[in-house]
Image (cartoon, rainbow, N blue to C red; front, side, top):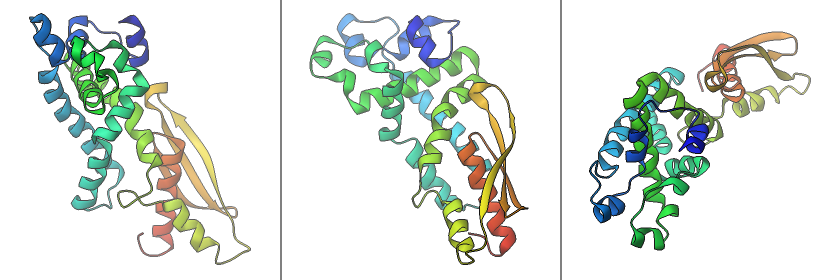
Length: 226
């Protein structure tokens, strides 16, 4: 458990919560575990995850209507995303599975890994509260948002660059002006310069996110919203 706690960047006060979060129903039924499976924790973790992600994208994308926020949230909390987060943490190695499920590749099954990620999140929430739960989630979600360039996320930098390129003598640069907070919850401030003039400023939990927000502000100041 200590190795997993290192990966989680969190040390449990009550390790029974973590053990419960890693207990699949196949194992719980097989050994008749007193605490049962991780299904109840997964149920709670799903709600905690949805709230954290909803709050974040609501504050970060103030220009987006409800429909776009819903699509973006869905892409961040879907099984594909959650199982990739679980694999990064190597949760499969620590799962308690029934013999049959283990033999049939349960440690690599997407649905089991995604559920385990939500259950572990719920365990952190119950052990230490929303702040620690949010820190855990944002390690993955802020990075995932930066990688998106689809209907759920507009690439403001590319749009701004396309506008600037209409005048070949003009150029834009992004300059990091401030960096605050602990390693797990950094906040970056970036300015975007047109030649030597500041035309936008943005903040985010990564340099890329801050650059996107700076480009967004620059585009709005230059005319209509993206």
